[in-house]
Image (cartoon, rainbow, N blue to C red; front, top):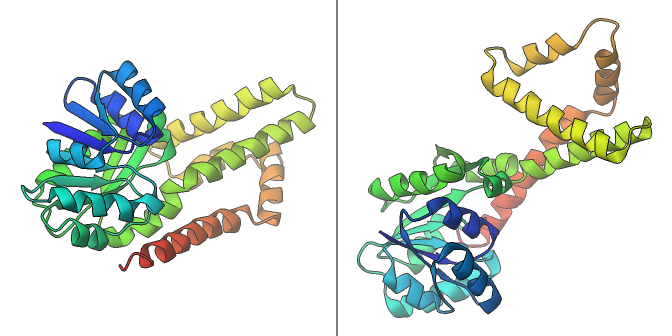
Length: 265
């Protein structure tokens, strides 16, 4: 199987690295320096022509910026889209309906990976189009499971997925920054506070994954009556942290819906 990446950015590189030698890979990008790096590092074929990469592949990963999509797809129509190529989009906000209209002969799969995929700890939501015969979703699951977990969802859920797991890492990073700031304010050196905050979040997440207890039960285990944790939780409740984070997910999901609607969903 030959896989083409249209766009050689960081997420594309994470996927290319995870594929190793299990597939023949060709990468198209407008930046010659980027292409030289990818060719040297991963021994992939490179080209500055999206049409050339598209024509030569069985599976095409669309990994360009949203503002570049219309121009890129226009160029691909010159090549033609017969042969039931599988096109897997990682472009945020571009609905399957739009992609299917521009590439009518292809099987379209839309995905929403997230930032931790860059270190193999991501989660990717996968939605298949009406022409997907199952093979496209199967291939997408195989590709993205190499950089983390995958979940198959209907496309109508992808705006919510974007708000939660797509934007969520930024919300978690902000919480980590705040924990570090609090530690420094109490006299800890920055490096120590950073190590404590990062490992606390990693440990809490791994505990939540491994434990049979609910998140509420785990929180109650740490919260002794009259102890230190309950004092801190009282402050979080006062400043409505739960409402703020839930509101952030809603706002991000709402914006994702607005962006998708601009493409004629």
